[in-house]
Amino acid sequence: MIQQRAGPPRRLSLAYALPPGTPKDRVQLLRKAFMDTVMSSDFLVDTQKSRLNVDAAPGEELERTINRLFKLNPAIVEKLKDILK
Image (tube, rainbow, N blue to C red; front, side):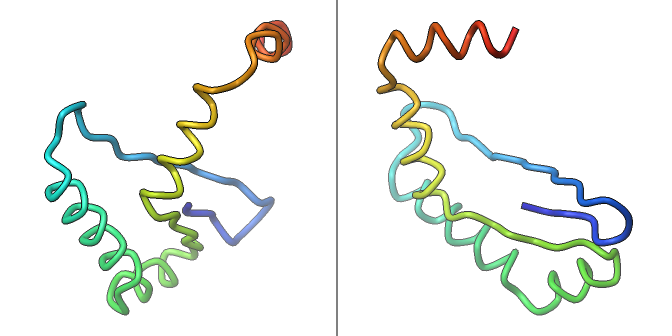
């Protein structure tokens, strides 16, 4: 997650996705490359210069969260639909 430091807190969340059927080895390679990038000293120096905070979540964590959403009780899904209108 990338957040601006100056002014009121703002959050910008970006999730990157691959199409269904992407080979698992390719998924793992891309996840590692992404985390290596956001943790690299060059990237972190650039985000500091831009006055941004980075809080990247591993792909496995995002995948677990999404899978839990698909397992929600249908009654809760209906309540959420009403709330989010």
